[in-house]
Image (cartoon, rainbow, N blue to C red; front, side):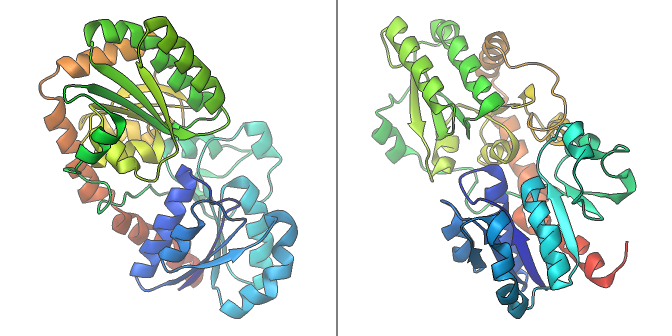
Length: 365
């Protein structure tokens, strides 16, 4: 198959991570794949995966000028990701006279769905929360929704990663208890960071060697840095640090005593065998265990759907203290890692999506 993916940006983010993994997975299964995008920090990962990068300055404005070139590549299917890109994806598929597919990667207000006219048939969703969000009379019929999932690169994210050099780089004491919050710091996801920072004084009283590392970037980075500075001044210690964006997040996940993440990032942290608290833009889920793993995944680990609680300092104080007191926490985290290896690798993800592509190309429902 020759598949053309469409996504506006390729900056650091969950959808972008999914896309370069999808490129690599499709290539590994013998397919040709291209990506139409405005580009970003992750565009080199697309080409490293063996995919063809079709870069434009403005996706919405410049795609018609690329249509003839894309036609010459012989793409057989256009697969657009999220709402902005879908507007281009559907028009491009019509121009190329090939089937069109849209994937949804997060919730959208129903009023905006009502005004949206670029759904594909079927629409692919990445969680039960997303399926619930669009399955209504103003969105998409339930029978036209395909549930897929995020696959994890288990060659990169796995147990046993050596963190000695990172500990030295960060100047961490051998007995440090390390909380790591990894996210894109935007809007409601930044609320997780603020709640963690508010929880730190109480947690530090019970665990004097505890430190919080914030790994990532986003529009709320400045507000979080101000919060960190204020907290460190009040406590007269470097209780929290803003690390910023890193390309070696797997080392931070392996370093963490406890990781706090959402969506793809939560799966990556668990694949590293780290106890993981799911908290994101839709609220607070809590510690992910083998028993509640599927319930957490249905909410994309507090990124989609309706989470059971709100992000708060009190929730983090209670959960972190409980995990640090639980002698079985590491073993249960290892069980999560094994579950991801056996069911949620990139290979499984691509094989699942390949079936949807094949049905579209064959013209079967």
